[in-house]
Image (cartoon, rainbow, N blue to C red; front, side, top):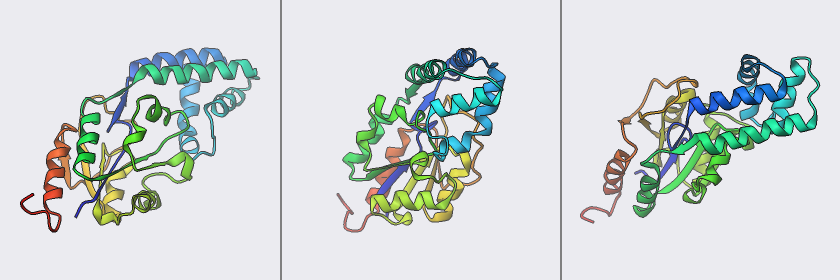
Length: 235
């Protein structure tokens, strides 16, 4: 009995244009007095700290990056770099074509919806700017909770907030961070979505119960889940 559907965010519901991101990160590096390679290397090394909230803001990250290279960035430099990052998110992040119809369709079918994302303060911004947040009954973001996928605690937290057991929940994702393996391990139904513009930067998963190649195909699966509910036969 599936009562709730929990989604990953990036590469599942939304995507980021990597060419725009690379262009803007190069501009940010110049503002900070760094090379693009220096900034990218520092960001990679501290990625988990950002997603755990240990480096809480993009301003903190960029100040640390410059200081780590022996520079003394002014508050104005850091503020401008952060402004460019937020502007880049507005330009580079888009919603997959199937996202809104699928979220609406699932709500119409009566499913509770959750979002579970390894995110930072800036990575979470598109939830609001793209108008996605109102679709979800529970939003669990790693930088606010201090725990990352694939830690089972963050999946359990999502289920608790939705008021369901893991066995009553489907988890839909591209598979980065080993997230589908972890979802399966806690008892969720693991649904892998393969679509264009997905990044390979965050690894993959080895296991999935279902595979879809268009987010819209999730509604067909969900109709089957709904039809399997006790007392729903023939509706």
